[in-house]
Length: 164
Image (cartoon, rainbow, N blue to C red):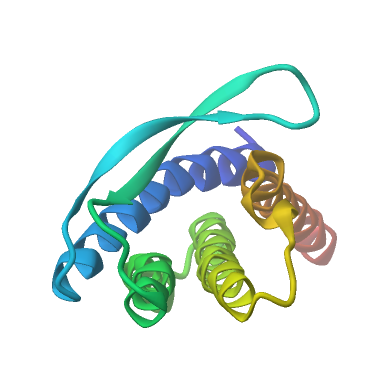
């Protein structure tokens, strides 16, 4: 199997694990800030086509207030990125490094948009509904995985040319 395909598959597998960890971290932070809640599977209606997908989501039992919700929103993906960053610092194999880098970037994306959406709503000045669409929330990570796959493919051709 070529380096591009290996990177694609590893990136997707890491995404699944990182996304689950991200939601678990939301729940842990929720409890740490004094809230309660649960992880649910919720339907998420697509806007571009007439279809519904399902996603994991942490549902607080009661409203938290802006500061505690901000901690939950930001720290969920940020804490999920920590083990991947440590792995990235130790791993030297190109496929693993590229796939880990893509997934750290994806988790950083989630930390920024989840915190940013809350802050924009709290300020009341800007409403960006795109931030909560499934197309955006899964499209950007899919783009990151495709970029990682391209980088891996380019890496393999650069190595082949250099050693050829």
